[in-house]
Structure formats: C-alpha cells, structure tokens
Length: 569
Ligand SMILES: [Ca+2]
Ligand SMILES: [Ca+2]
Ligand SMILES: [Ca+2]
Image 1 (cartoon, rainbow, N blue to C red):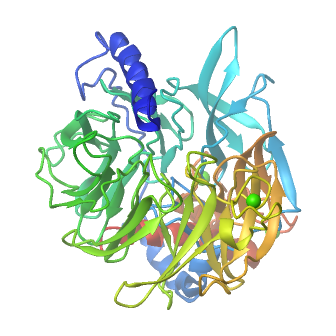
Image 2: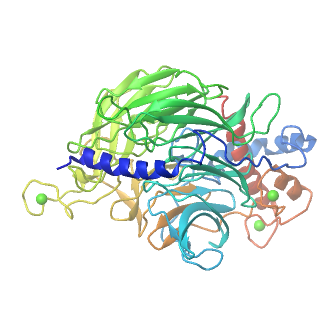
Image 3: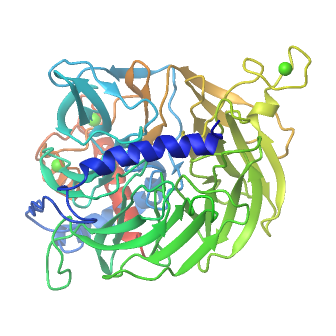
C-alpha cells in the first residue's frame, strides 16, 4: 500500500519517465530549438522622446492623480504583476451583469478551456489556453475579443504535461504573449498571433506562469522554473526577451542561464523590483530536504549564485509561487500528510531571506495575497483539497507590526454547521470557498476591499474583508456567480474567469482604446486622438468629447506609469 506521497511520486515519476522517453532529439536543457528573431519594429517615437509627449505630459498632469484608480485596464499575468501581489485597483463589477460567454473557436469548434487556469488580459483581448477536437486533441492559446467575446485568432501550443495549468503572461512593452506548456516556452506576437520564438527544455514546464522582468537599466528577461517534482534536476531559467545588441549579446528566446533549484513543481517566480532579484520557491529534495525559497540577481548574464536561500523549518515543500509585498516575501507550502494545519505560511525579509513569521496553514499551491497597507497585516490564502485530511478553505491570517500571528480565520470553520453532531466537518456542512489550486485576487478601490475567489463548488464569491479582524469574524459574501471553475482576473471594469460553460466576462463593455486600429494600445493612440485621427469615441457613447480623451489618457498613461517605474522602487 503506497502512502499518498509515494502514490503521488509514483504517478508523477511515471509521467516524467514517459515524458523523458520522448525527450531525446528535443534538445539539451535550455537549448533553443526555434529562434525566429523578428522583434516587432514599431516605427515612430517613444513617449519619452517625442516632443508631443512633453505637452501631453503637461496636459495630463492634473488627471494623473486620478489615473491610478481608473487605469489598470489589463491583467497581464498570474497574480496581476511581476511581484504577484494579486491586487487590482478596480472595483469588482456587478456579477449579475454577464457580458458574454466564449465557447467556440474562430471556426465554430467547441473549446474546452483549462478549467482551473487563470487568464491574461490585454487592453483588447482575453488570452486563455484550452483545446479543441480537430481529429484529435489540439491545444491552443485563444485570443478572445473583450467587447464581443468572439475568438479572433489562436495559436497552437504544446499539450500540458502532468495536468499543468497554463496561465499566459503578456508583455505589453514588446507586444508579446508567453505560454509555458509541455516542455516549451512559446512566445507569440500579441497583435498577429505569429510565433516569435519557442524555447524548449528537457524537463517539462508544469503549473508555471512566465515572469517578465523589465527594468530601466537592463534588457528584458523571462523567467520560468521547470519541473522535477521529486528529483533534484529542476532549474530556474533566465531567457532573453530583448533584441540582440552589444549591450545585450543574446538572441530572442535564448536561455542566458539556468540555476539549479533542486526539486520543483508549480513554482512560479516573482520579481523583487527594489533589489533587482527574481525569487522562486522550490519543493526541496524528495524525502531529504524541506522546501526552499531562493533569490537570484535577475540581471546576471551568467549563472549566478543565490543572493539568499531560505529553508522551510516546517519541512514541507513549496509547490506554488511567491509574492513580493514591499520588503517581504510570502510563500505557502503543501504537505501531503496531516490535517488542516499541515502546511505553513512564511514571511521572509526580501533583502536577506530571514524568516519573519511562520504560521501553520492548510496545504496549498496558491500564492499568498497580502492586503496592502493593512493595519492588521492581513494575508489571504486559498487552501485545501477535498479529502486526505484536508478541506477547501479560504484563510486569512492577521499579524502584528512585528509579524507575530494575531489571528487565523478559516471559512471552513466559519461556515460549518455540524448537522449530524459528530464533531467532524463533512461535505455539505460548510461552504467550500477557496482551494489549493485557485488564485484569489484582491480588489482595493474606493468601494472597499473585496476578495474574489473561486471555490471547490465552482462558485465565484466576492467577500468583504472589512469585518475579518479575528478568528471568529463572520463570513460576508457580497456577490457570487455559479459555474466558475478558474481563477479570476480584473481588468478595467471587467472580471474574466473560465467557467464550466466557457470563458466568461462580467461588467460593461470595455473602452475602445485602440484609436488607430493597429491592434496595439499605446501612446500612438493618444497622438492620433489629439490629431483628430482614428476611432475617437473611446467610451462608445456615440459622441466624441472630452470624456473620451480623459479616459484614453488615464488608461494608457496609467499603465505607462507602472511600466516606467518598475525597477525603480
Ligand atoms: Ca459532522
Ligand atoms: Ca493603436
Ligand atoms: Ca464618447
């Protein structure tokens, strides 16, 4: 009789062996199999060099303060940004206002979207992975028009290995969308869908969302971890995303370095912009070592030594991503044994990896979500599986200013009614909010702080965290939508999530930001608007007026501010 961990190991090793048997001929670790180096050349001027931008800058100064709240028209990656904070500055739309459900591809074939995956959102499209049946299963990335819900293009991707969940990543600066699936990191032109490069690895890429790192002082890089769940051959790979030059002597898609991280599965890396480091968790060597969190200098041009390395004192491995919350790093572990407190949530100093707090938590592979500037120091964690001593639960942890745990609040306890009086929490006796493989997001706006999370019952719930200040605080569900299986994304006034019936959109029709209709939303659209060219009715009201101009500038300049300041904080 195999223990759960042995069974899991046996199953995954079988998968690995099956995969490895296909590997010869597919290239060495980190080898570049295809490298079509055709960075999209955008004629014209940058926002910083065009003289027009100077007067635009002056004119938008007054609206800039307003723009942060009305900007963020996009959701480019798992966790919403390179730090994986999972925080949106937009309110949650009315979930009774469903705009569309996307179920068919551009040839009207039914799409099976990856049920538990997240999506990426550009100003014009939702990007999601799934498969169609075309005489066999064909995996694809789909471009879904945000206004119509229609698939406008698609691109073939490698089939996921080990039931990997593929959340794509958009790099708006280069108009690239990245997918880590099978054993390949694939890069597509966001506008045309054409392949830009494919970089293949010996190990598969499992449950990892690519990280794009941009800094004002260094060329752009992509980071992914590969899979070796129970061995010691996994790596963090650094891949080039900028044009070849004397300053950046690497081809597009070239693996610049691969740092060994031992065992790894689902370890989505995050960027610590203040220190220029990429941070990843790792599983730890099977049966010998506990999970680890490692920080590497992101802009190194050959394999660097870790800047720091943290070893989990609880002994459990990390099977998910990390988030960078200012000067601290958060990670949560998945333990294969034990009950509802068998995993742990750790908070580390971002500068040196020192442990600040270690709190027992329900097992998870989800990324911890810290409430920004929160007096109670609250951290939200989506946790649990049905069975094996665990239950789905959304947990909120409170911390003192010195990071000592002050309370732990769990929805499985707060919603439990012991119907049969046996003192055991059973199915049907509690609301199964959250889950180990779902990524909740936080909406922080003038309308309050809301947590948006899926659940094991496929209900998307919006929770108010206002009253969660102790372990016995009530559960306050503000809104909900049924039939949602995946992790949500908020972009502009919209919420998107994969559901059992297809990819779903909530909220009003998004702004028409692509004034020039070239498929790209950028400062060129502001120039065109100012010069009276293109489609200038940005809000689709039927009239062109100052409101259109203001919304266009807020949306485009808001993202620009975030991009320009990345790496400077
Ligand atoms: Ca019971
Ligand atoms: Ca445009
Ligand atoms: Ca208008």
